[in-house]
Length: 269
Image 1 (cartoon, one colour):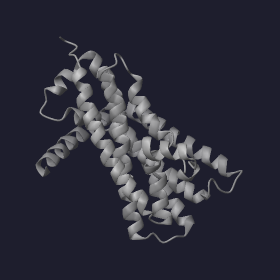
Image 2 (tube, one colour):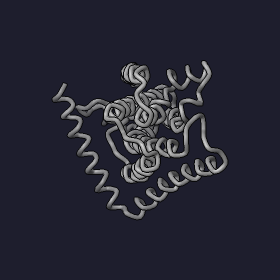
Image 3 (cartoon, one colour):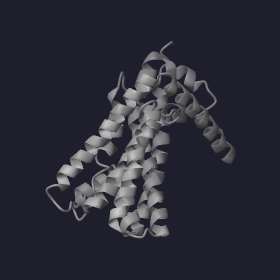
């Protein structure tokens, strides 16, 4: 198990170096992509500043608590784009269509790893920086002392949220092996979580909404509940739910991926 993990970390590191060199080679394109990512971040900040210009709280969350949530959301959103979507799942339907998958399946590495998370989109890594600044800005104005247990459990839930989101995006993308020319599936998988992850989990206060966003599409574990845990304290049932859901979704993603890939028919055959 340890040897396998070392192998994939080494492969990922080499892909990361290659993508960094490639991005620096085409600097004009890199700067344009970086500008687009920064514009997206500014749009999110403007929206919430307009909202809080008219009200004091949203579902019990103060302005600076929401700023912490938005900072965490920016970090996670850009991380998803950088590590999963931009150069990986987004390209799977086209790779299936033109036969690039053929060569990937022949390589001695897991196809799910190779097609869904092996390459890194560098501009999104850089645009995570404003998110970290927002975390600092919010904490400065909240005037709270962070408790180590809260931070540790918050990071654990955050990690589980990443695994859950990766699994949902992978499951949606794997359907492209079955449906012809299904270019929208990777985008649907990403939007299912990212559209709701910046919402405070306390707004989902009905049975149907809780069932949907806490269990079926657990977007609340990406930013909202980690923020709540770090700032206000640990609620252990959320920790247990996050770990269990991460295990279930990851297992489902690998099983569904392996099943869907059996439908792949080589473009050259």
